[in-house]
Image 1 (cartoon, one colour):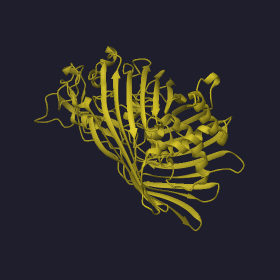
Image 2: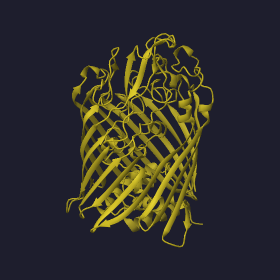
Image 3: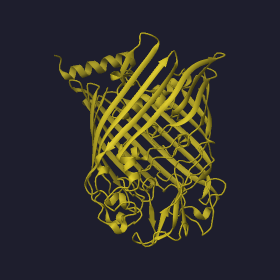
Image 4: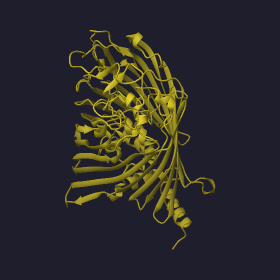
Length: 589
């Protein structure tokens, strides 16, 4: 048997000989992981030569960080039909557990409307969960159908909470030591359809065309981590539960699919055009009231009551009817251009969308009458703005061996983070007559990805560095300026970076990866994005840091451990005391 060091060196040298010093990892990712371009927002089975080279260069580097989440394609179940019909079925089952390592901070518990998620969990177990992801695909000569679904159960949400403060519990449907039904439904047990769409490739008068129809995710722009700051924000809802619980998650993995029709046409070797029309509106998935990462007891699922007093039960607003957005009126068009003789990809975008994150209307006196609870003094409701326009440009290139990408966009008629109290009898909606602040905003972000070969003195076999700077600015407030939240800033800046070192064949069949992530907001608490570069209610001069270890065995079994620490000032960092350590083990088949 060859020494392990020789096996590792031989594996690395063989790949490098085929693809070059800086491209060998890309080839490994493309070959071993079968990187799915459809999940990065590009058409399945596409012929988009203008986009493909860029996406392989960009996506392969990103995929290094998603090894713990994406099933390895080499273990897919494929049915041999003996014809041009191809059938593929992938499944991944995962068990995970997470533990809180810091006690609740009394300074954060002082907020009666933001303490339930904190009080519900003492130090110790916060998640005990099993997940199943199933993906099915059938294709025939460029046409096909793809579907995927997920199911999970977290036993923690079927147990009693650690909340021993009935005077500050905002729920009224259950006691202070129980989770509400809606919170349990979201976090405790759920089966959901992810993708379900038909796709195809056709030629129309020598113009290659890709199309998809059904529930799927389509993402434009160059967002690496800043999901709520980029162009893609207008195209799909965000899973903030995943953002909190899975450190170092990239933007493309946070967006949830919606029902839509989309297509891409390659007009020339240098120019492509894409468009979509959405038939479904979905709101973003916010940690439900009372769940571990919840920092607002009124949002969203499980939110029942808001207190005007230091304790609940004296003067409270009860949850009224939310104003959700329409399923119609959401569409977009984009152009990608590849100038001759230059390694440059330019994108141009125009979108119209309805917001997936809510504003809150407080309505004292509403719904109060005979038979009302004695503490009820009004109602509150969540409101989702409609008719937002977005215009943007993007660029990506290779510079000094790095992939460098950026985008700039503006949002018109966009809702701003607001504090809204309606006068008795005042009527407000989510479109023509809003009560929240409305304005125009500017957004920009730039990212870099560097893939490294073997480190000095064997420090690593390969490594990847990713970093992104994001910023947004409120250019103008066109309606209801007085409603703009005074605790928010007109300008905010954030940074997020990840370094991951990989070690191949440290033992027979075993690869190791060590990811280290850092998030920091040096300036401002965004007045546009409530959770800007943060899993909580925004932060400034604070952030998070994480470190982990992942073990891959025989390209089938994967196990990992990760520690996440939050830092900053308790006045702006609502996750300050939520440090946690998580463990996962999964198998793909």
